[in-house]
Length: 150
Image 1: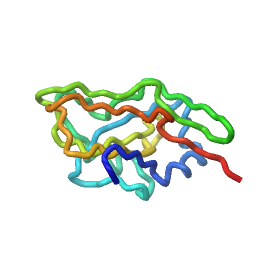
Image 2: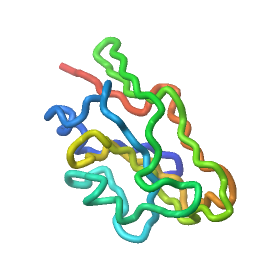
Image 3: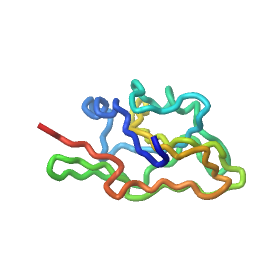
């Protein structure tokens, strides 16, 4: 996997089918983690924020525990393809006392009972908030798509 690669957890499709995620109304957050314990992989069984990744969360001035709330999620469907997107991007501002060990960004559903994870972004760590702003600019085509096929 290369820096800035987005990976959707394989379990996401099952969670979606089971009604865990309402992409149009649930609250989604993106949190930053280091590499000290659990590295995210697509095949993580039942990826949940509290059980799998919160123990790796970075800390420091300028970063709020639990991550940043997406500014406004949206969904749209065209020709059997549903796109999930955020109407903005996420930025943590540079801070001299900020975390210095950022490796991944985890997107999770804060509305879901177990805070099920959607996917992750390789930040190419270690990335330091002390060196400059840390930003996530979502792909112009959306965060992810779900395609119906026959």
